[in-house]
Image 1 (cartoon, rainbow, N blue to C red):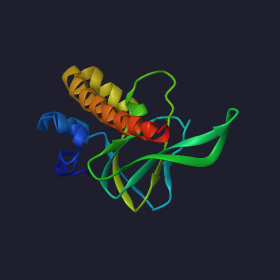
Image 2: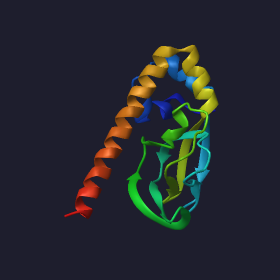
Image 3: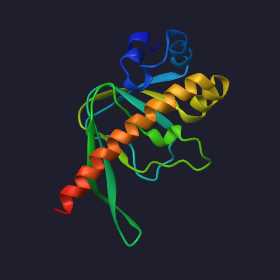
Image 4: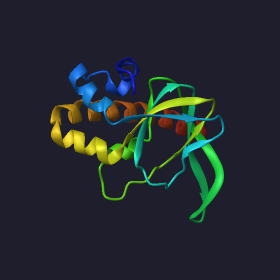
Length: 156
């Protein structure tokens, strides 16, 4: 079973009280990924959201030419403990796919949540869903800032 202290270390979950964390704990899994392995690739179904307990994860976009997917990547950001990734899984639309790929840059231990289980929890507890999505929006905003800076550097 996942420890409450592990959940409390995750940035995305900081606004949640112990009661809400307990409900989330029931649908939380632990995943171990070796260095060099991918959690997912661009365009894969986005069926899990992840949060890093230990290790480093790189997010990248796949380079493509004329609509063809490539095995070459442009690295966008490197994430460490307490950070979340796979956020497309928490955007509840019929067709969910990842916009990036996520690769373990070291040995990684991560918490994971199935998209359909999160959606069910949030439908039962709107307050939990609100705080969760507020923190998720903050994480996305921070990543967009990094991306904008990278674009500015390209065009200088």
